[in-house]
Image (cartoon, rainbow, N blue to C red; front, top):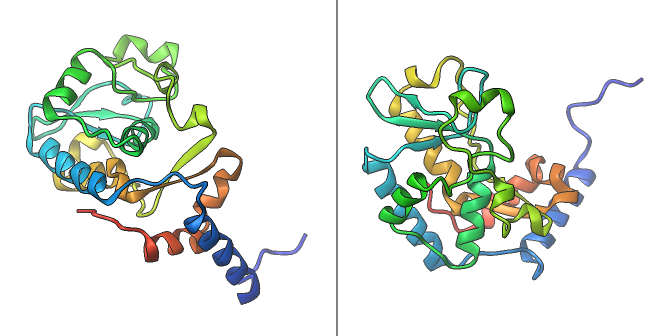
Length: 211
């Protein structure tokens, strides 16, 4: 088998970019109004500032499974998740819904904020939040969409999240849950959203309010 080249040629790159531009302009693509994007940006900043609220961190390990609570060295509660909270946020934002901080607080108390696609049975003894995306029946996945990110939400660090710098975790939280940093693609196109040429189009054209 041939070794895959680092560069597949400008013709292919340009063609992928053109498909991405067509998708960016497509009337079929779910979009969010600028006003709602601004309001969500403000909400997330307020959420970070309210130390009584846990922040959601997209990083899972066997010792820190989805829905568990990890106490950071600063005392801030961290809740590991998969991508489900981003889908939850995008769905609310697309419907022009922006909760208040008190509603977020109540969402945690009543366990109505999805933290995973599913909670594994073996993790239930150390899990505090059990809400999964399937229980939120009106969600992008159930409607055939995948929610992707423009700027990476990876932490790019190894080790325990409770020992990472809190500013890095807060910055990831903003990138992770800010709908300005998201776009939807059909689930059947899931890999399309990971291609550099596609992400570049959304970076160049999207209205983003990211800290």
